[in-house]
Image 1 (cartoon, one colour):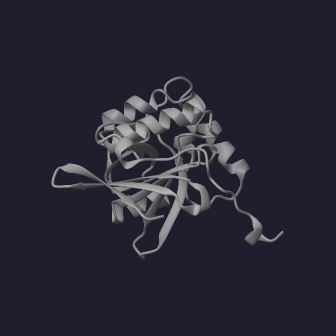
Image 2 (image 1 turned 60 degrees about the vertical axis):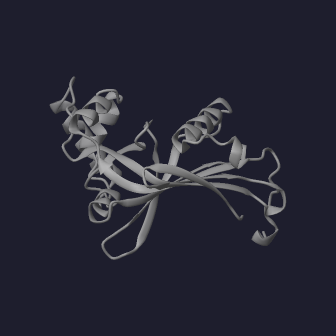
Image 3 (image 1 turned 45 degrees about the horizontal axis):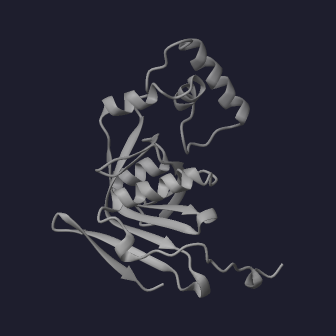
Length: 210
C-alpha cells in the first residue's frame, strides 16, 4: 500500500467567518450538537496534548464531559501522566475531529482543577464499575498483569459494595480557552479556518490561510 495515494477531497460544507457565532463557545456547542445529531463516532472524544517537565509533548484521547461559558471539562486521575504534566505546565491543547462532517476544532488554553464538590457530583453519576475502576487503576503506573488489576477491583468492590466515594486523586479539569479554531474541509485542500483569539476581555475572529 502506497500511503502517498491515500487522499480524500472534502466537499460537504463551507464555513464563513460571518456565519460563525461571535462567541466561540456557542459556535462549538452548535457544531457539537450537529456531530451528535449526525451520529458521528465518539462525538465527545477529544485529544488532550500536554508538555511534561522535560519539555516533551504527549497526547491522549479522553471524553469531554461538559462545556460551559468558562470552557471545557474532562475528568482523569490527577496522578496520571497527563495530571503530572498539567501540574508542571497547565497550558494544554485540545483537538476534536469529526471526519463524517469533515470538521475539526482546535482549542488552546489553561487547565485548572474544578472544585471537589463538582468532581463529587459527576463521580456519583458514573456507573458503579467505573467508580470502582477509578480506585483500582493507578493510571499510567506499570502493573504485572490484567489479572492483578482484576484482583484489586474485587478487593475494592468488597470494601465498597454499595457507595463508592470519589478518590481524592481523581477529578475534573476545566480548560479555559484563549484560542479556538474551527476547521471545515474544502475541495483541493483550500480548507476554511476560522480562528477566535481572546484579547482584552473579548473574542476576536479572523480567517486563516489553509
